[in-house]
Image (tube, rainbow, N blue to C red; front, side, top):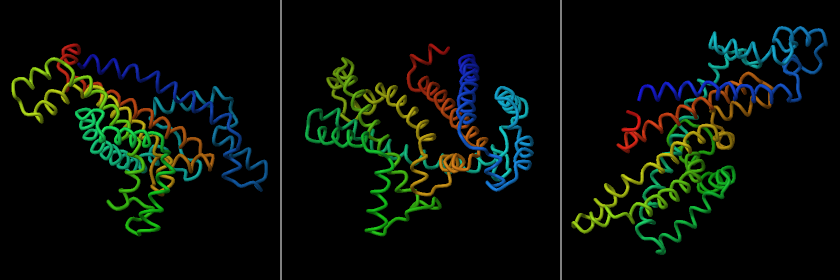
Length: 309
């Protein structure tokens, strides 16, 4: 198990290098001069040139990328914000708790809605409940997050006045963002749970358990769901990683001070170090979540655990 984890961590290194190279290149060719943005459009050319030299923007592309990677690896320094002059890691760590809370809340909504509905739909295949559930799940997959967020604001804030439209300071503030972000994930979890359960409940050992006279709840929850969890866990892990990186629109709509909104504001301000650090941080979080999901496979399925050994 330890050797497997170390191997996965080793493979993570080229992934992070690839992410930094792509993002650095895209931001390098993006129009706009951060030095002019900081000093203002009316700043004299001599001051702009001095600022560019101070920030290292006058050096060739490869030299800039080498210096960035060197500082990141040797000093754990991914730069300072052009706007606030604070360390990028400090900016990201200050915004990450809000993003993590939002993603966790959305995933909790998706699990509480998706798994029970998927189980019932599989047990009552082709019933009215199954048909309606799959139609709603299809709508959930197709519905844009920003559109659903605006509809929730219109309904619960403008018309009913029950929930606040912005902020992230209490449970009331978390309800609408979690619903908006978790709706699509709930639909995906529902469809995967139904599909996985349908494969399992047709197996011989399920019929054997039923023939022994075991309760339907025991057959479904212990025998069927326990063996159907692997693909469900895979989907939940991938979706949680996407929620961490895909909360940009939700954070912007509901004014949540998370990593997504920080990156959007940094793009507008041409604050390239914060954008690079945010993408790198999200890529690292996604990779770590995938590793944890793989390790969770071994806990759920003894056959996979024996392969690790």
